Image 1: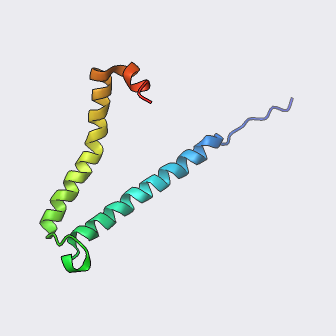
Image 2: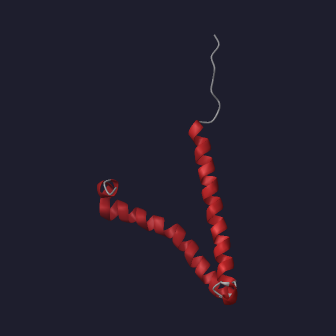
Image 3: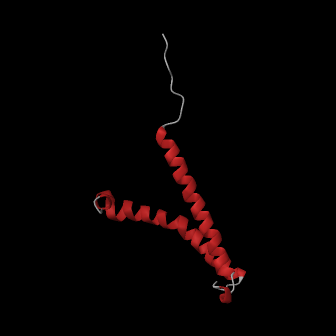
Length: 89
């Protein structure tokens, strides 16, 4: 009785991993570029902010990135309902 046991990962896991990896890579890359753009001088094409202004904007952006999906989920669950959300396509 030769019984084979599959101990490998599902095929879709590799797609999920690489999708998540490149999404995070792009997100953190854009944060770095955004920071450099904000503190670069106006003459060089940047915004010319001081580091305190840049930190305030950066922190607000990061906070909203994590907060808005939570607010959207509450809006979808409590106010709109799952039927309106699913049929909005």
